[in-house]
Length: 80
Image (cartoon, rainbow, N blue to C red):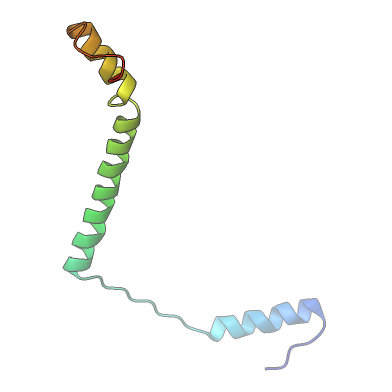
């Protein structure tokens, strides 16, 4: 394929070349692949939510505060 130095002519030549090029993409995914895909997506979502809960609501300070509020004097200074 001859490419000219002229930018306008180069664009036309490339356009003609790509018009004649046909790409057929046919993807068929198996049931196993789809199940794996969705299960990994759901698992990652659950792990993200669990990590967020662990950092925020199930962290050390909130749990210690609840224990101290419900049963004062149960925990020592070393445990807090």
